[in-house]
Amino acid sequence: MTKRVVVLAGDGIGPEIIAEAVKVLNVLQQRAGLAIHTEAALVGGAAIDVTGYPLPKETLDLAQKADAVLLGAVGGYQWEHLDIRIRPEKGLLGLRAGLDLFANLRPVVLFPQLRHASTLKAKVVAGLDILIVRELIGGIYFGQPRGIRTLANGERQGYNTLVYSESEIERVAHVAFALAQKRSKRLCSVDKANVLEATELWREVVTRVGKDYPDVSLSHLYVDNAAMQLVRAPKQFDVMLTTNLFGDILSDLASMLSGSIGMLPSASLDKNNKGLYEPIHGSAPDIAGQNKANPLATILSVAMMLRHSLNEAAMADQIEQAVSDVLSQGIRTADICQAGETPVSTSAMGDAVVAALAAGLE
Ligand code: NAD
Image (cartoon, rainbow, N blue to C red; front, side, top):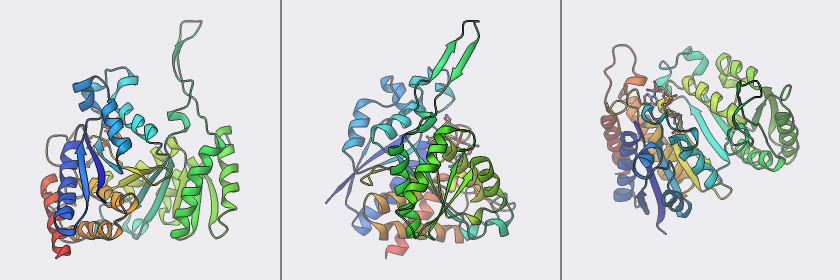
């Protein structure tokens, strides 16, 4: 049956990297029988410019009816003056909440060809393969009340609320434990239970859920220690489970272990494995429009989409193999170049992946 995929290019480098991901989908449609129907729609600043809203109703409607959503990135300098309630980033938060995407999967894998691209010593990161599972639609990013108020003494005060209910923790913990079962059966839950009551409950509930997965060994770390350990000895981790805010920060930190934020894909899943797939980086306004962004995180997000939402695991493997082949050929965008290497453009990198993929399909 033909599956529906909504493609949201977004802002900044979004349209450039999404164009390369679409080339990859086209090859699979033409040469491997991938049965999908793609529809483009507006989100973020691009949507604000046309409709006044970062997540127009028709985009959310299309996304809700689709089997999967592929997103570039949102945000940029030109929308930073807007009220925070209608900024581009609200489009993304609205999509995550509107699709009930509570589990965010962020694999941090170091391709052996890039072991020298990391700022850490090659021996520290060689063979790295971590999966960060981040709770995505709860915690302090969504908690109420929130805002900026004026106190009786005239001083302004910003405030947000960190809130997690048991069911919110349980459902994402089940996802993380099930994924750990398919990997090396080790799960580390990251919290700040020594200071924050919401994460004291987090630790208690994760421990309780763990009783259903006796084959998975569960450990707990405070987030400050987890940040330190990720840089000191990252290979001690397999699956890491954490809250929305901590996951946001730790996964950006972990991205540098892999050489570049431009290498890391992500999947955000609902309870039926319907998902939103996007690179973990933002819209990179500093390099937008220059055809130099790395499209591999977006292309690897397509692989995750095929595996998790479209039931095409073999095609996902073929994309990942094509990316690996291209890296073995020494083809690099600027962000993963070593001294003496000449970077290729966004589109040249996309073309190289398409060529490697097509060769693998012959
Ligand atoms: P960013 O991830 O856009 O950029 C951080 C740095 O990484 C920049 O130097 C950028 O050039 C570089 N970079 C990012 N992606 C790259 C790629 N594919 N190839 C090469 N280099 C790359 O983060 P930021 O600068 O903090 O945010 C810029 C905008 O993006 C802001 O408006 C922010 O709100 C938004 N943002 C959006 C998302 C999203 O859409 N999911 C995520 C994070 C930030």
